[in-house]
Amino acid sequence: MEWRSGLCKLKQGVKKMTTGTLRDKLARFLFQYRITPQTTTGVSPAELLFGRRLRSRLDALHPNLAERVERSRDKRQHMIPRQLEGVFKNRRHQDQLQK
Image (cartoon, rainbow, N blue to C red; front, side, top):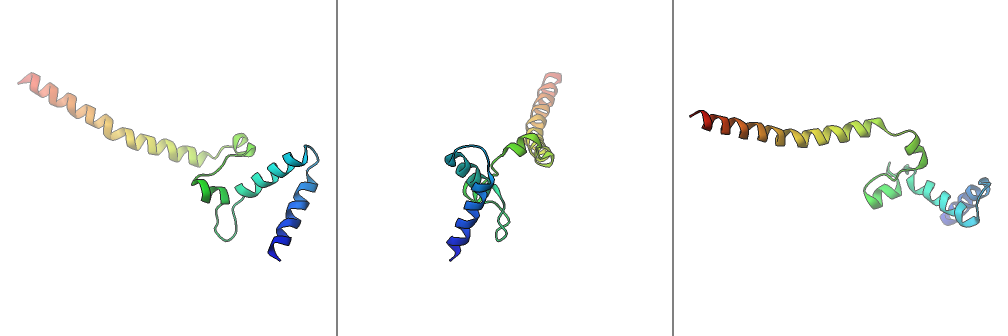
């Protein structure tokens, strides 16, 4: 019985699309379904499968700034120990030259 409700949703979704071939409509519908978070898990099926969010056209137009800030912060945190390591090496080298 559950497959019938899914099939009805598929038919309704494809009917609402006005442009493209049936194959294109089906691909767009399935992509939208796969990137939409599910109520039971709170994440999309694609995110469960691939471990990351898939980007849609809307994501390209309106990027998530919070994710961008988080990524840049992570990059900076990884860079700081390397930079400090270089500073300490230079100080040790300078101390050895002064002796």
